[in-house]
Image (cartoon, rainbow, N blue to C red; front, side):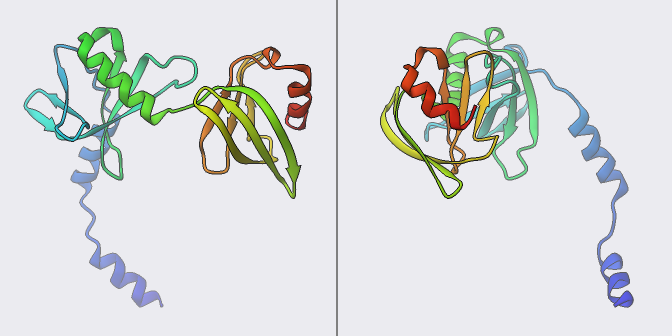
Length: 189
């Protein structure tokens, strides 16, 4: 057993210099501005990026503060499994209008979050809550766990609901719901 471990360690050569270089790249904060970066749409509708002489055929957009500040500190990452960060856009306003809209489109796709306008039915059974709601995109049904993290309070009256598949829904103003709808939500509050 111990001999097998030694053999495995010998098979994997550790390249300390490559490790240091990769660590330094990960720690480096590169700000992307209109002068240093150009975003474009590919033929397939994806977002590409050119930074200096380096081109990225496809990139992904991540918000650092998705619920409180969706227009600032936007992380641009490679579209790979590791999603290595390429750089950060401090504010969408520093980019040309057409590029701002491309990033906003990608943000809307990644952070799709319908607003719940009406809670028509909400019942609890066997540790799950079954929702029947009207959203900004129509009527839908979804299921959440009956745990504390299924419905999160984001302010005095704003709620974030996450279903068992990771889809998010927003209730922008709990007090705008009817008394009956608010009573249904008492299961979570």
